[in-house]
Picture (tube, rainbow, N blue to C red):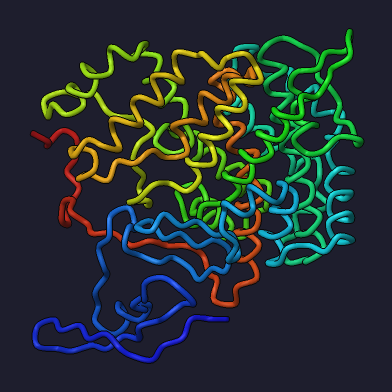
Length: 433
């Protein structure tokens, strides 16, 4: 359903009064529709970082940061992570409903049979330096998909949009594994249609041609849940980037490449790497008190990474699930006594009971444990954000598809509050002082 309006908001400027409809969604805060503000009053609103601005109507993901709620299409993230798998979540995000058994089988097969990439892309990878960051490779490789699959770039053709969506969900994990293999100097491993989504990714990353590779079900299950937890997160920076790129009519591969570029930023997708670096820097439990004191010192530049969130003002619901998986993975891989985990557990305990952190609502977020978990699986820190991109691809595509089908959609064009020089005349170079 579309947002409805049953009341108005009144704005008074210089004794002139303007009325604007207040829209109500199915859940969440009401929204003042200021779309006609400039036409009526000659004014713009000023909202740096758009923290109080709804940029679109969406039916995909709902977050209540104060209550610690994350839902995909109305389903709590806890239930999806506990009872379903990643491809089922993909179907839900794309189509709005959980699949029937036959729909699930059909969807899984469609994804599986799109996992291979064009063979010429292997030569494309050879143009990068061997030590290129995997995220730099991903931005280029995903954007290049439009050159290899130009039969699915017409955004006005619904069938081409579906094919492009399937291709990206299936092929971006393959490209991610290729970026990893290229970085460590090992041969690419072709995907196997007999494996599940998470199993296939582990196989492509860690198998080698000279010996058999046995899938560890604990690691595959944990990775599948990690993908579910990161599949979508409403109108965050990278999703907004995908939407605004798509609003220009850009092809879907270019839009997702733009999202990956935005995700690469350390304030967005690199947060788990920063949390891992913090735990490594602390080193041992006995050094935590000194670290906490430095965090509290207003003259110190030390920050508590992996705690707090731009949206969540309560415990991140994904963090609880990630904590369980972290223990399971560390025990399975023999890292159960990892000093980093001990530091993480003690740091979490202190932060949850220290009034300083309680007052500031600095609760653990999903990044706090995900870095340790991925490290235990064997992924280097340079791959953490790449895995985030693999998971978030379906969310980006779902948001992009929703935007394309929205009759109110038009090219994004934020306004500004200009504070530069006023008009002045050009002075010849010899006359300038």
